[in-house]
Image 1: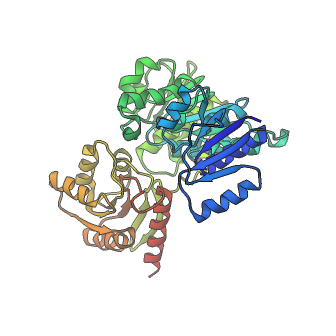
Image 2: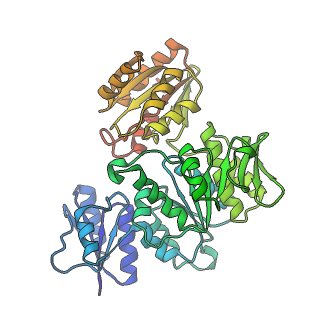
Image 3: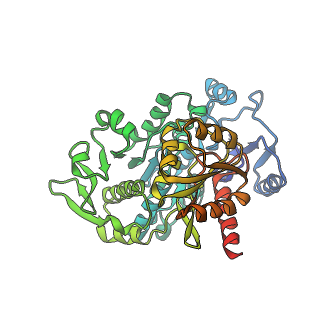
Length: 459
């Protein structure tokens, strides 16, 4: 029996281990951490004949694995993986493993710095409104290997029609044969540079997904993609919310007179009114265009597209409306974990707004975000480790109406007070930071914000 080693005991790692076990591998799962929850999982998996090693880092000395599967959060260039590849041990990501089990099904693969989650969720909603079995997976909902576990051996009634995958740069990087039917590139801005080192390297990783896709959809309003990609992706379907004149090439999807228009054959075709989407912000119109493009390229009729779009509730933690208190709306944009996403968040709500920002600061260019704060924020309430750094940056640009509340628990009532004082319409949590200083992930941070807001309103 050949041995496979899975790195990382998250849901994708566990599903990968079970998939390999079903295939007949001798499976070992390693995680550098240990905790009561992980010990419980270790016990459960032992009952399935899957060995779990906690507080463990893979050693390549004796009894070598034939295959190593890496969870999405594990850097691709850590020494043990570089060494494994040099030794000729096949090393793949969890997404690649899922693809090998589901490659007879067409995929929509969605990548990009921002906008992936909304575009993935909206695309899946449209495909499902067309009565297609098309789960969303990857960085959203299921891990891709969970979909493979559940559906690979499904009979006719339960067979998959499509897989809609949100694919991070980490997952593209660790996939060798992954090739979607439709590839979507939402946006491109500097992010994850601590991992990918250079912008060029990050761009090339994202580009690999599009190169491997049969049909390509690209955001024509993204300055970087437009500049770099216009010549490289001349066969792509480009999108623009600014009308037909802004299309790159002679085919694509655009908004004109309030309608999403398809330009594929000679005559432009009206598909859906843009107002059918209930989410705020110009960036969501762009997400709408890319989702409609995927649906049309998959042969879905406008009626089903209208049903999917008009019933779509939006994505939790992405400009999610929480509640209203004395005329002030509380909006959860916890998923804005970098400057570009936070700038979009602030641009999408009514101004003036009271902004709650901070957490674990990331590298990146904060210029446009700071300018947006100056234009639209009546005050900024800071939280987390980034507070001293953000205070300094705000002072440097001459913005003085900020204060450090430390935690969300303290920030919400203070922001509400400031909103009344400045007659602001909105309190917006849009952190421009990772969450790891105070929370395990952005979802837990957003859930905490929701809970604190609801408790405050009930007082």
